[in-house]
Length: 202
Length: 114
Image 1 (cartoon, helix red, strand yellow):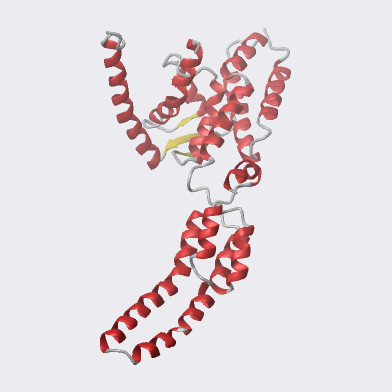
Image 2 (image 1 turned 60 degrees about the vertical axis):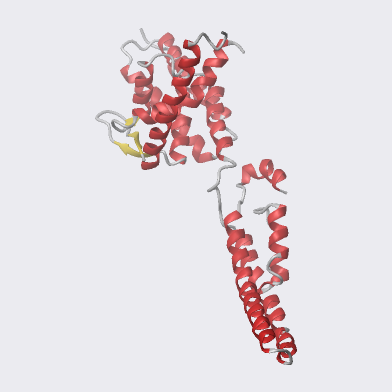
């Protein structure tokens, strides 16, 4: 006996599978369809008696294309919130660099990006006060404190010196520290996932 | 909940670890994974779902793949357990035995209905 409808059956099955997988990334879809196509070819070559009924049983065992697609999708959903899904976009790199060098522009880009949550954006805008230009501006006012302390007692000079040293250190490390923090928190949603996840991150 | 749905739920969480465990012995291609699962009873219902599963495990880094020529026909994609896959299997194994023992104990005691 032969399977008169063989190619018709298999093509219809693969077409349905393609359709069910339509919302998946192209590479993923091709991988799954190609594997299933070669699975069918392998099973057919091992078939002693290739009849329409045997082919239909083979396709039945493979399962409903919708079920295969559901399995493929369940994985994608599970991976979505997982850490490690990070990608550098030009906007994000520019935002971080300008946060240090040209603070107001950096902050605007920070808020324009969808890679960070509102909380991270607020932290990023407030904690390094003005990036390095801001830090140097603050530090340039320190001579005022020093001149105040000069007229005071010796212990006053030491205390003011120590405090200013600590504050300077913080001012110099805060912007770069915040940039590192923001870089580790960055999540750029990919094209097709963007709308779903973007809403919860704004 | 119908018993059918229950079986599906139970299968879902364990099947990928069963596949990983099978790859411990030797690299396999998809068809071999399916054949092996067929001999292990009702673990796999829709055989086609193994392919998205394998694909996902590859994305997650639990398996690595390589194409191998076959004597007759097209090359096949073989799946091999990676380092992180080995760790995942070991973790699952410990977790599963603990879990299974707890469930066994509850049912041995009469399902906690005494």
